[in-house]
Image 1 (spheres, one colour):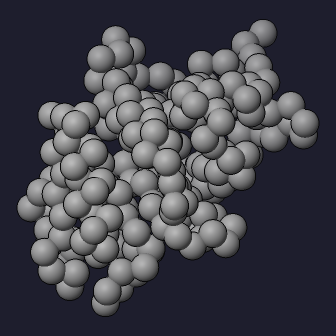
Image 2 (cartoon, helix red, strand yellow):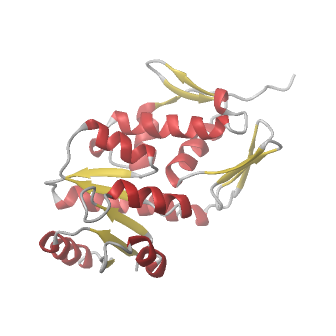
Amino acid sequence: MFKILLIEDDATLFNEIKERLAQWSYHVYGIQDFDQVFQEFTAIKPDLVIIDIQLPKFDGFHWCRIIRSHSNVPIIFLSSRDHPTDMVMSMQLGADDFVQKPFHFDVLIAKIQATLRRVYNYNTERIELRTWRGATIEYVKNTISNEQGSIDLTKNEMFILKILTEHKNQIVSREKLIQNLWDHEHFVSDNTLTVNVNRLRKKLETIGLGIYIETKVGQGYIATEEVSV
């Protein structure tokens, strides 16, 4: 049974979501003290976090930033705020998805299922390592390293890198990435993919690999590799 930490201060909404998710065999935890969100997160060790933006004391962005600095646990924002910058901010902080209130429960459960399936299927893959431009990609650890250093990636960033490096020197369409990442293309904005790719590229720049993830305007993305002659 997956453990979900729902960081939501609206008791009515929290109880409704908890009851609905229990029907899908998810064990949902709430926050008792909104001054101690990270401490409760650490104690619970959830498999997924759902977090509102507007919270007592500190907003969801604050807690997402702290959680992401210590963990790659998947994070989904759930908020009534509908400004595009809120979604962009959540993605830049390392969130995996964004659901706007009011929402249809089928949309929320589809995103939860797709995220959990994407994240926790890694350990069932036989291939755990891949090399790309002299760097070693470790899928289980969500890291990529070379002589310039090692960086940690979120699950989304690793999944994007995995798909691109599986198709080295080939253009991977945005549609294919969206379908593989979120399974339900209807629920994903094009901007969400852009933010994730840009965040991946920025991290790769720290070990000299950012320039090798190229954007092909109107087509998609490509991970270039030197071709042996």
